[in-house]
Amino acid sequence: MSSAGKMEQNVTDKDMGMLDSLEKGPWPSHITELKKTKYPVEYYAWGIAHKYSPWYSGSFRVKYVFSGILARRSRDGKVSETHFRTFSPAGRFLSTSYLRKLVEVADNYGIGLVEFAGNTGSIVINIQSEKADSAVDAIRAIMGSDVGGSGDTFREFYACPGQALCEYALYDTMQAMDFFRSNPQIYKYLNTQMFPYKLKFKFSGCPLDCATSNARSDFSFIGTWVGAPYVDEAALRVMIESGKVDPKELVARCPSGAISWDNEKREIKIDGSKCLKAMNCIKQAFPAIKPGKDRRIALLVGSHAQAHYGPRLSWGVALLDNYQEAMPFVLKTIDTYVDNAPRRHRLADLILRKGYRVISDIAQQTLPDKPKATPSSHLRFTTGVVLSEDERQEYAEWSKGLLKEYYNEGGV
Image 1 (cartoon, rainbow, N blue to C red):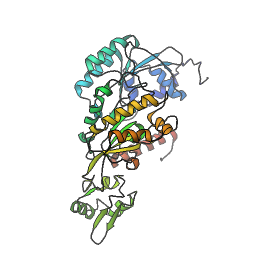
Image 2 (spheres, helix red, strand yellow):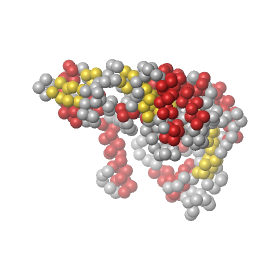
Image 3 (cartoon, one colour):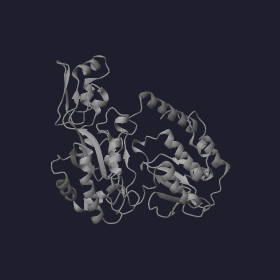
Image 4 (spheres, rainbow, N blue to C red):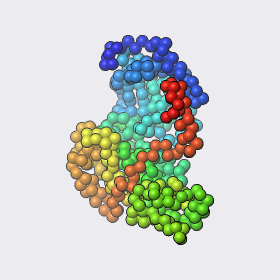
């Protein structure tokens, strides 16, 4: 069968049997949930069996809505799907009231399926094409949200939960996200495609950067501090003497060599001029070691995962006392991007073409008194950091079980 085009997509018993295998086991199965909806699971089975997507990209239009609508069709042309991206609350805190409204829209205007995953931060509702126009009104009236977050506009803003959940958070990420998204000069672009390409905002409460803003965002706001971490010597000594903390490991795991251990005095010293905010010591010895008290927000620009000149981490712009200070810089940068970037070029592409001066000149005009931020403190990728050791072990045993069941292998 050709991988490019003419496919009958006839689903066999073997194909559906692969779906049955995904319903086995003690964990919840997404296949079981898919079967409760109107989703065409037979196409999903075909795709898994053939290791090839059963879908072609497509297009779909709704009157007066210019962003957030995606479409695709099966390769045999018999089935089509329409997806609406909708905006979600900061931190992805969804109340039961909001979820009920979301389910109401998904059941009455869609196929009973909602997607929460993805780097966009959006909630995706699979909408029945013939109900698309009325679904837009329902999303606005019932959910109090809107359709948007695709095309040459602002993608959905994303913030880590910050101080609502995390002891490391150094500023209110959710409030910051709402501040920018609700500003009239920003809000007007949430649905109207006026940019050369997409723009992203992400907000991380600390240098661990759980929002991956330093790698995937045009405007990044990362909580940080100046100088060395704060050390409670008495509390740290108790953790060391109890065996919870190994001071030699603290020294060994510091990437910049900023930590030294005085074995006679039984105390550590941290050179703030060398500290890269990797937070290894804080994760090992919290709360005896905490982020420093001179706290700031690092403003960075221009990262992306893929574009004309390849993957790119952010450039540092300034250390802010509060996120509100960045608004004039952000608006001026957006205007410069719109006026100077070619079609389908990200902000980082413009910087690489024109030079960093295009940003430094704006920073000098709008943030003249702020010290420059550097991205060197924020290069961490932290997928899985929230897993406990018990959870890690559980996943390891689960993966061994899969290998044994399907490949008759005993280990990972």
